Length: 464
Image (tube, rainbow, N blue to C red; front, side):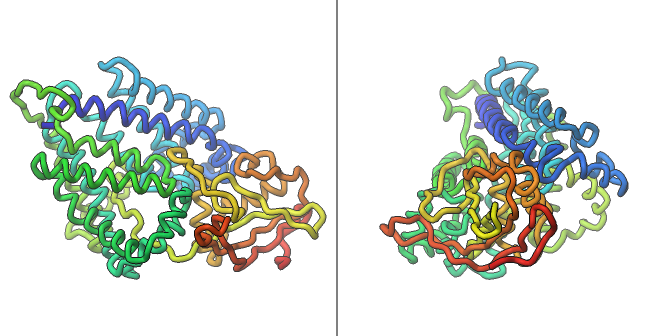
């Protein structure tokens, strides 16, 4: 039966995920939302306050301290809390460290806005909030049930989203024929996976539905059923981690798989103990299931019968991201459009600016970067999906930085940026994986071009 051994191991591994997450943020947070970053927090907050926004609308410690120094201290505090969880002595420090790590990460996720729009950020916050309440010195069926329910929710809701895909690409088997090529940041193994036969990709699509819609029910089954689910879902996550870079997501999901085990699976079975149900645990379990069910019905069934009565409460609890819905890869995009930044020093010869991790030169091998998540590279994939609709503020800001302050955004690029470019533009290319044994990793075709920003004047018509 799940008990304190599982809880203590989960703590340490979750602390490791927090450590990875904070170190990843520390390498880029100032570039993203610092005073001179792409979406400065210090510029955004006064507008929010002027519109009547309060801490309850923007539950971040940086609501009170939006400075670059506060961002640095937040990273340092998060790293210290994570280290306490991972290597600190077992005792009274673990629970406060988890609470502070979760609060700090929530603060960054809220303050980061555009760059923290990923479901795994919410999953980490939800795991952290629940881990604060997880007993480490005794067995607690209810709290372990909650973590199993969270694991069920992660998979089953993602399966529902795929089943409800408007283009039915998972049902007809076509989803995985596009997945490897169009994933935001594929690894080089995705190149080889994409080259597998079409019939295999169709089988992968249907197996994914089985893994997410049927297998999760084994999470609540007897030990043999849970161990079967553990093996199947672990292979599923390892395949995801091998073929695409999703930050810490796959690793966090694997940590949650611990709750499919019993204490006896980690060693000798502890002597049976009489368990007394705590009232607060029952209340937490009821609230978690009730809110999860409500949010799930709002997302997948168009609403819950009681949702109108909860409207004012939902406005208050949703910003804290303590209970979430998950709909990963609901449908697979069928085109990979990459925005490529270019600059010129003479107005005639344009130089492509290679970013660190997203697709660029056709002969550059896709890399492994997870569990680090390069958030600007990742976010630009979304821009490619809808570049004709609008240009996001962070993209406009990036272009302006390339003109006026290239040293600030140099860490995003492999190419050495010109300190004084004459103009900057974006060209859009459709990418496909190259045929095997062609000597290249990608092929690409130009599809569009943005306006050209004259670094000394203003936005002018595109030069094609």
